[in-house]
Image (tube, rainbow, N blue to C red; front, top):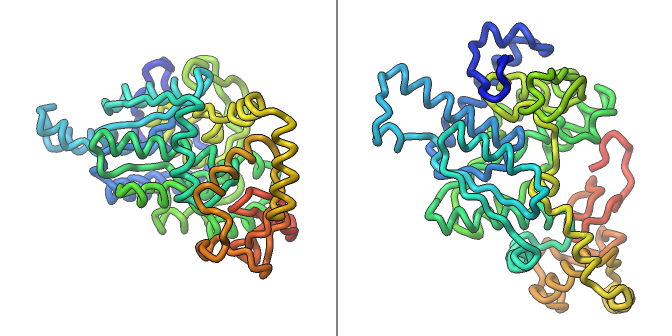
Length: 386
């Protein structure tokens, strides 16, 4: 690892491999697969750059590979060479000044030379984006919408800037156990859960981008990468990394820390500035975690109670809190109450109802309702809960 954390170098593979905990052959294979997938997905106009591990790796690896080719061909840094960059722009969406993505996204943009557009949104901006998200995604699930709002605003800004294609980091958490709730699973349970997750994973960016007429690239969802991830051991996905003091400015962590996506981080630690950043959900990095409190602060508790009772009496839907109510109101405004006009996804015919909203669960093994966000909506053996 570089001695100066403020100017990390792009080390060679030989020196890099000395620090690896994962099988060096597997690390090299993963690195090559990601680079090959990026080759298929570039040139791309811009990336939704959170500054997290996933998008940072994609952005920096794509530019690292491009620089290698430029050097091999004797590139001179001319305007034509610059125009051939794999990713030209980056859009970063922030909801509050406390959003943790800003620092890392700025560093990655600077290191790659991408033109960064930082979008700072307010509660009012969010409400403007909400109707589009709810109509497009057909949901009033708070978790989905907190994430979807950020993605929708990023995609909308990308389109307004004239970009036609956008890249996201979707899939890395699912493939390489990025979520912290997976860290306590046994090897057997993690393998079983990962295989189920791969079959059920879905990403709002695909639906939102299509609605906006944008081409979406998701390099981590390449079939070869999915297959590779299923062959990784638990230790290659979840392991302990020592954060040294000389990288404190860069990692913003010190000492031993458990990380998911371990082998992916190892594969690009010599390239990606945020390789050893702490995993944070999109709503934390962007700052939309403030929304539940903001909605609660701006809503009369008696109003909430009245509407909870009315909606349950009229439609049998359980509204959990002020944020949930706000989203449901928009859902009802968009779709109305005439269920005969609802899409197939929004059927409430009693075949397999969610106990929270009555809409049909999407699959026989689905335990999370994608319409209202109820969890658990069904009880399955613990190893395969989704």
